[in-house]
Each structure stands twice: as C-alpha cells, then as structure tokens.
Image (cartoon, rainbow, N blue to C red; front, side, top):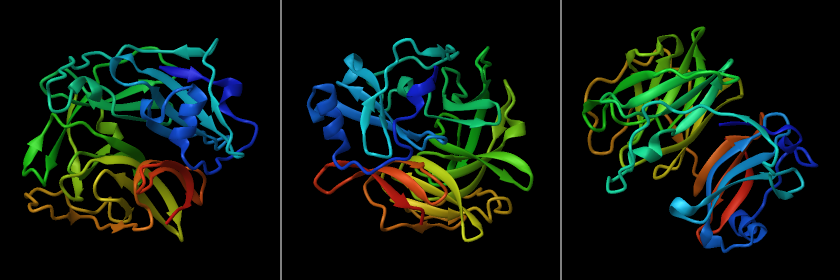
Length: 307
C-alpha cells in the first residue's frame, strides 16, 4: 500500500530533532501505556527530513497501526490518514500463517522495500517451494508479477539456501551496473545485479561477505565520506558495521563454509559509539537518525554523525 501524504509529508519545521523517551511520548499521545507501543520501522522523508515511525498500538492481531511524524522542532504528530489517497496491490503467493513455527512465515511476506528508479523492489517470502523472493513493481502501482526466486550460498550454515528471506537491502551501482546489496540472517552479505531479477527467474546471488552468525541485520544505508563510499548496517547482535564498498565489485564469491562464528570476505569495522540501535536511516549527507535503546530500556530518537 502506498500513501500519498501531501501536506502530511512535512511538519512545521524541516529536519528531525532528538526526542528522548520517544516510545513513552508516543504512548502518551495515543492515550495508552508504554508497554502497549511497538516501533516497527523508521524512515526519513528525503525532502522535509522529518522522521516517520511505523507504530503498533496494542499487541498481536488486535494491534492498531499508526503513522507518527517527528519534525525539526521535536514535535510529535500522528499523521491523519483520513481522506488520504492511496494505491495498493495484493501480494501473490504469500505464505500461509503458521503461529507454531519458530518464525511465522506470514510475518516475512514483506521484509524490506526500496525504490530503484521507478520501480519498488520488495523482499520477502512466498508460498512456493523456492520461497525467497525479490519482486519489482512499477510505481504508480498497476500490477504485480510472481517475482524472482533468489538463492544464496550461506557460508555460516555451509549450504545453499532458498528459504531464507532478504531482511534488508539497498540499491548500489557497481562498475556502472545497478545491484541490490542484501543482508540475510546469520549474516551473509549478497549482491544481485538488478538486470537478472526477472519475473519467474531463479537467480543465484554472489555472497561477498560472512559477517558472523547468531545475528540478524536490521537496516542498511549507503553514504559517502572523505571520498569513499560505505555501507552502514545495524544488527541485532553484532552492533553497527561500517563496510567499505570499494571491494564489492571484485570480491570473489564465497563458496566454502565459515564456521565458529568467524567472518570472511569484504572487511568491516564495528562502530562502538553506536549501541542499542533498533532502527536507522539517513537523515542527510552528514547524519543518520536512529532509535537507540538505552541500558535502562528507554527508546530514544537521536541524530548521530555518520562515522
């Protein structure tokens, strides 16, 4: 579903100001308890540079979705969706719900999305045997195809995989060719040339790094600093990684197991100043905006300098 926000796309002040205790303040705005609030995602409007938060009020099947905006004065507003123009598409072959599974596949029908030119690329699972999918949809929405089935060599698991979804990805050009750089559970980093992602095709990605097992990537952004490009990736267990992109094009694909939680492939640096990061997006050319969980359990919305 795509919402045309119009005037709701910007608050009174450009930018995003830090908001300590953002979960508590959203709960108060919605007239509920902090324990009933879950922040699901964060995205920055590239024009207004306001932060938008996807929030659930309540838990489980009865939770109510809410869209919240934070502007450069730190003002928190619930975005009114009354009368908003929107378009939608039904996702074909979505997996059936299985609450007893270790990870309910239905909740991974859509794991991430990003625009590449006029197409919206959507990562997630399908009900097919070759279940990991990347779909490309023209925008404005008109129709959706069956998508591309994607396979990877998962070095930490020592096997080829077709059932693990891409959890986060970014478009990035390598040697003049547009690619998707994708992060998976446990944490292979994989590249897919966009031209290969055709409807109905089965495509093998190139695993350019193994970044450590027992981990799930959350968000990734690409930025330039001091004449070089970097990928910044937040994770559930291994902190925030700063990865130079200079070897993405030439790194040979991994093809052997990498055991013991070791790493391999392109190099990275863990940014020790960025801890407790639950959500992350680019704010501008010099900053990111994050949801950072403090040691005391408080969720804070903060702008941080790009490392």
